[in-house]
Image 1 (cartoon, rainbow, N blue to C red):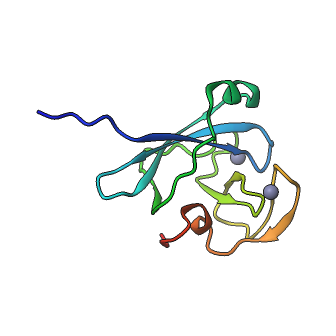
Image 2: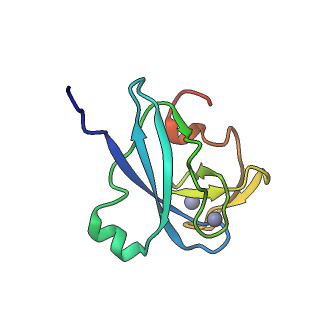
Length: 120
Ligand SMILES: [Zn+2]
Ligand SMILES: [Zn+2]
């Protein structure tokens, strides 16, 4: 039996409401899709020490059924700002304010930009 260690990346995000940071665990599936399956509250300083948020993920992105949502406000999706940072998104508001850089904008295609390609 060959066991392949899963390709796992932790992406740093920030809560749109509380502005607290959290990490999102993405795992690459056999078909090349990245699925978010866990989110956990973490301090920005600790995340830096662990080296989280350095890697970019490319390809199709989706959410595992187990994905618990933002650890602060339970928002079940994410958006990526033009500043390159990721924040939680409740799938309802189309006008969002980035908790990292403070810019407000209209969302187009929710998660698309993080994947750099395929639509969900
Ligand atoms: Zn949130
Ligand atoms: Zn931003």
